[in-house]
Length: 121
Image (cartoon, rainbow, N blue to C red; front, side, top):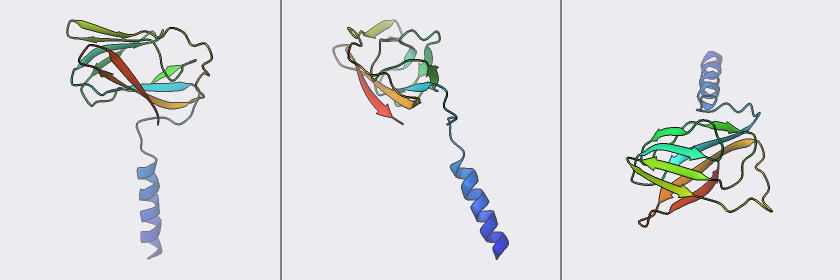
């Protein structure tokens, strides 16, 4: 009986430990959720050297690391041949995010406006 309890505990710990992220925090980790009905061919966030690629509707990208990030950012989305942009004016008065995991949920309105919903993961 003790063997079964130990086996069940080991399996439970194994399942809980399996996620799509590494919680060894050394940076701010941001991913994209596509909340629109369009396929995002490319999403540029801030000054990141690598864009997020091929994010399907209701899909998520992988995490990218940032040294500094805020609850919003410059966003440029390319979908087919259209480009959609969210351009913040400045970050005056904003506090940089602490190390952690975050999601920028992005949507595009009927008028072509990009909306960003910030989520703490």
